[in-house]
Image 1 (cartoon, one colour):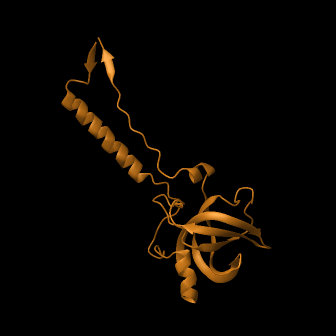
Image 2 (cartoon, rainbow, N blue to C red; image 1 turned 30 degrees about the vertical axis):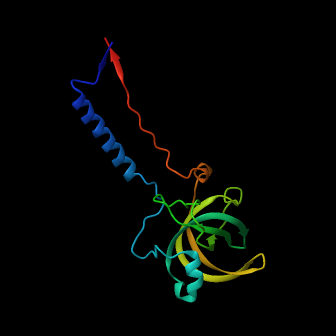
Length: 176
């Protein structure tokens, strides 16, 4: 049996390199980010920093992500309590990183608590509308409140995946 790699090993290597470059280009463009970033976003502001800054952050546009801790249905809104994490390239929360503070999300209308339940990952984009005080056990806490209709709920499978699952392979053909 002879190993066939096209006309020459150099040509096969060029085709393999071309395939790898095309694959990297496709994966690089397909981040799957749910929201566009623009100039009015305060990209580096964390929930903890917003709480410490006080009233100066009211009206600031933010893009935050995290894990839902609690869901509360109010008369005209659904309020989510979220522990914030840094964003990855796809705007998912990087839960392996250190938390960046807690924040509240006020969504106008009803979000189904069977879907938006504690433990699920979300990304939100909106304006810091207010600061509210609350407690976690005996600890007093200031929560920035994001008023938004832009809530992206990540599928449950992404909550367990911490690294992209990419595999490359090389095929070999035997012919007579």
